[in-house]
Image (cartoon, rainbow, N blue to C red; front, side, top):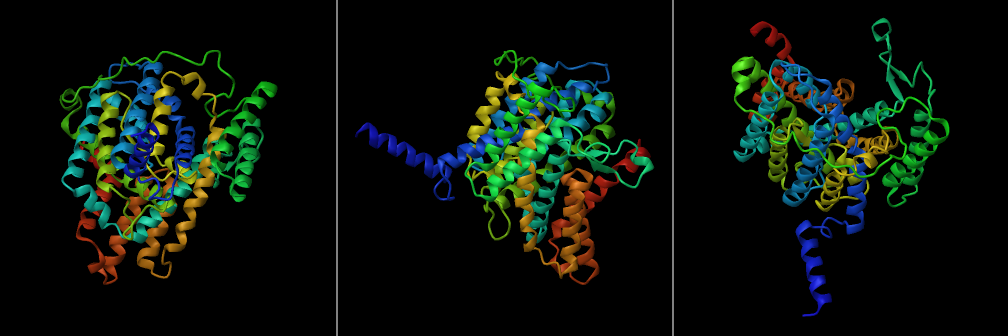
Length: 474
């Protein structure tokens, strides 16, 4: 057999395994999508260490930023590749925002950092058990298709507001307690900084490329905005960049610090903080991870037209299993629970449809361990342009919801609006499910409710009132 025919056989096997042709994709689209996803979520390598490093545990200990950055990139890279190989779905993973703040500011102060990471490992194992027993998939199937669609739309709006806030286009009003307006355009109601202008120009540039159906529009928009940001920084030296300052670093390569890997303790937290505190923390982590991932994979699948007629993505069980492994892996590496990232939709918007994009994104995360100075060149103001464009794409699915049936329209409305307004996917899903069960049950349509949704609604009620419960029980 010739070398050419052998190479062709390998390519065909690769194509069949990842279903590249079957899903209407190509290797070039997957590579572009992988790059777009990485650049859109690469900020986590910088932001997660800042959030975790700002907190202190019960012993007043601080964590080394460099070790947190290396661990964040390592786990994100390995878990993203695992998702690509096992689930073959274009869904990247990294340390979860919101969860990391919960860990740093609420859980860690009650115990040592190793103990807090032990609780994260326990939460990941519990989710894994729910997947293996089929309960997590069953819950996912129990959610009505139109509500799943609403969840995807809500996440689109959530992505948009994340992009606008991260880019500095929208700011919280400093004295919001004394005004009816909680957020404002720029600072003082106007765009007064160079970074905000970079975002606006970059967004308009990306939208023009997108409207003209230019291949790689989102990725070109990120890279073009970054070049503009570097030029602006070199000429004007402006203040106000959200996180990364877009200047060329003194060095490109750095040696990763992996000293925090394996720094966790599963059992001591229960004796130090008390079983009730630990149970409430694990419950909160579990609910957040459980439903955030459900919403994320629906939204990404919806964007890529990868859902079946019941709103299920391919290999749902594998997606959920890898996600649960990632939660435990994040705890084992001392970088907080890892979960599926909605920013993956940027890669799907760029054309990704298979796990090949994950291979690209994962390798880039692993390289980021060594190229951290170079990764930090891309500012939020450049990467956030992708989030706004993808938010628009996901919003278009709103037409699939029957707005004349209030028993589905009202839950859909609550799910869509509460995600961006409360900055939480779980809050939107919870409000949607609770109101769906309530409205169906009180309008004589209880037979349309899957039995398991009653239990899910009760869990979400407990989730929403956990503050009063904690103060009463503790």
